[in-house]
Length: 323
Ligand SMILES: Cc1cc2nc3c(=O)[nH]c(=O)nc-3n(C[C@H](O)[C@H](O)[C@H](O)COP(=O)(O)O)c2cc1C
Image 1 (tube, rainbow, N blue to C red):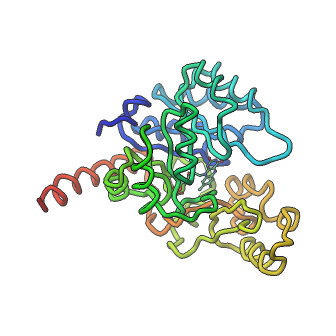
Image 2: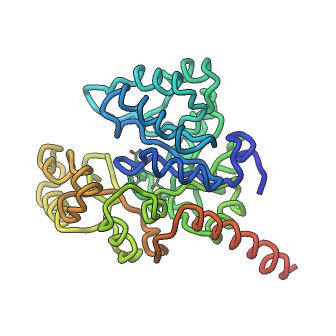
Image 3: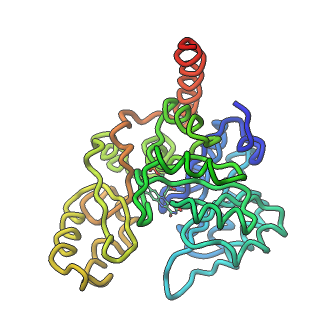
């Protein structure tokens, strides 16, 4: 399949693995890129810029295909060393950056001067238009279904994607709720030129996370995610567990008085213990409703091949046959 997204990033299939905290290491990024998609290393999972440089070098040894680095701009008081991370990206020869969180405007000159293609992930048409106006090459439009931070507008992809298509000139991919060839064809029908997946890529052989995480996703249905931190306007879609129940109880009890410190035990610093050690009840971790469509743990190559075969089958046999 060829379109503006495959051309822009020099990839075989319009399938992107989004940045994921404590999941997006070199092993997964390389596996996705080797399978013809675009793999992504998660920048902030690396503690320092030097660590990111090492992870990029490691990924380069594992694939000769293009891969990206995710830079998530967090609403924190003490900003991470973004200039250092960008320096590591440029010196590591990475040519694609996925930005998320706040607008990447401040860092666009540095990225564009280095010839880097920027795809900004956002949850609204207005933020997508802003990304286009500051020179982003593409956007990843993240619907309400998505794992992680869906924003505060709550617009599902059935509406958000065609709205993005009405307004945008730059190409965009659909993100949130994407799992298979059906998702890809639907995303394209709604105006996207590919898809970005998070949760689906965690349940793969190469994702360097504990087996418990993969099995939790396979066992989960579409009813098993919850939205936490809504009162803090930092909404996150997570898989339900004991820690999430505690957060929701505190949110209901404290209402508008809820502060981040009230839930810090359940959300701060929990990712390594969940993703590496498989301690599944320890804290809140991002997961999409798409868990309901995930029933296996294939290799990235099998997953991407299956997606492309199913998409082709739907287009050629099912859709063309109706005309
Ligand atoms: C465990 C997990 C961690 C994530 N961490 C990040 C992150 O650090 N930065 C980011 O931009 N997006 C992050 N995301 C969002 C994904 O990149 C992607 O946009 C999202 O998962 C798409 O929705 P889906 O899970 O329905 O495919 C994370 C998602 C998951 C499931």
